[in-house]
Length: 206
Image 1 (tube, rainbow, N blue to C red):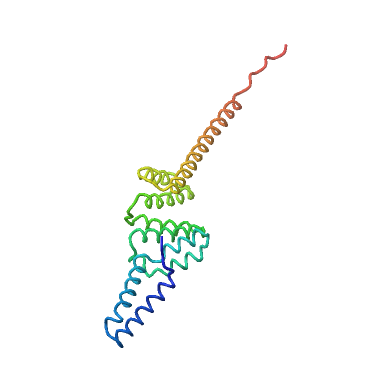
Image 2 (cartoon, helix red, strand yellow):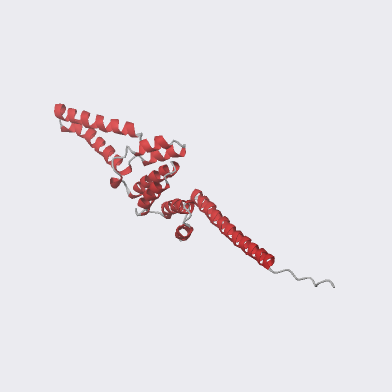
């Protein structure tokens, strides 16, 4: 997707407004109004889209600090288009988790969950991240609830499908470990029971 670098966008907004107003004042409205309109369009785009796309690209390159700085250039997430607002919160959550602050990450992702996103792909992305956090904290019932939510969605993106498969494998592996643990305890109990029985008394020698 085409996007304008945020610094270039801000520079164009400033030039459009200042230059347009200067032309308007010196040469008349029709000379400067087009620059002013262009600046307004760029500013509205900045309000609705923020810096989510460029921050995502930086995060994909594992530049957490750069992604956070770029994301902080968004004026306010409340004015963002719904999908971008959800992505803003998801990125905040991913950055927090990347810094091992899962509590803050979970808070940001729950904010993303509260946003009405247009497709099931975005909903699944949020649910899988929340499921991973719940699993990392040992909250397996909650992780299973998120998994059920994911199963009810129609996911079309292959990358998200792969993440879901990996999480399903982790849950299956966890179930197998629990089953093995139970078998181990039962086996140990049987050994203890066998060992606890009294030995047959040998008859006395005459």
